[in-house]
Amino acid sequence: MTIFPLPAFQDNYIWIIQDKDSSDIWVVDPGKADVVLNYCHEQKKTLAGILITHHHKDHTGGVAELKQYSNCPVYGPEHLTDLVTHPVDENDLIQVLSLSFKAITTPGHTLDHLCYFSAQEPPILFSGDTLFKGGCGRIMEGTPEQMLAAMMKISDLPDDTLIYGTHEYTLANYRFALSVEPANQDLIESNNASQKLRAVEKPTLPTTLSLEKKTNPFLRSHIDALKVQAAQQLNEIPAANSVAAFSQVRRAKDSFS
Ligand SMILES: [Zn+2]
Image 1 (cartoon, protein in one colour):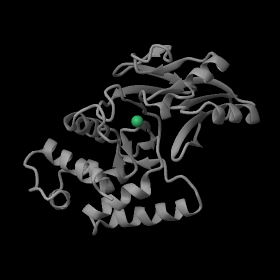
Image 2 (tube, helix red, strand yellow; image 1 turned 30 degrees about the vertical axis):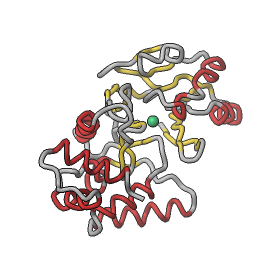
Image 3 (spheres, protein in one colour; image 1 turned 90 degrees about the vertical axis):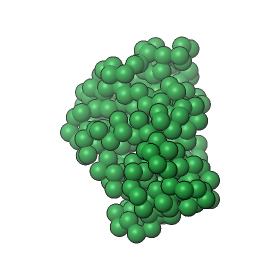
Image 4 (spheres, protein in one colour; image 1 turned 90 degrees about the horizontal axis):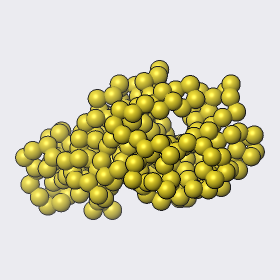
């Protein structure tokens, strides 16, 4: 089984899931059809299924055309009735080639956001715009409470889970992460490694849950020194409870330049 990205737009990755013994492929969040169609054509692959994490256009914009082309099943949020053939809810199981994925609802960035988890070795998570390397999605429809709950759901997965987010935001995320944890050695090392990858235009993804727990401020908003730094950037006093602290870190990132 191989998973690799087709870049699209400025910084999106359309993840391709492919088995060496099969000409079938699946795609995650095809915001654009032509990159996927070109790949299928050049590599003589058949599009066998689509996973959608949430409704934003840069994740769904290519689905209608791809469906027309391949007539494949599309798994995703229930309300996307014109695109989704198989509506997905919490804990639903989806067979993707030889892998079984479980849907995890993670409202916060949007209310319909889903992540897809496979417990194979190593475990895999397609995290859409919920968790990025070094960051998390903006809270556009949900609440900080929902987004923190999503972070905690992901934290409960195995530490060796490989996490495939939809955007190459790592270096910008790390600029903020370093501003709230300038002495975090794991963060400094991961930032250096990611800088080297981006310098030769290689993806910094996937990441692992264990690395995110050591470096991602949105999985670390319980840490006192980090809370103090985030509050200082906002000219506020450090929040007293976990939701307010998470919200403070998110707002500090939103206003970080
Ligand atoms: Zn989005």
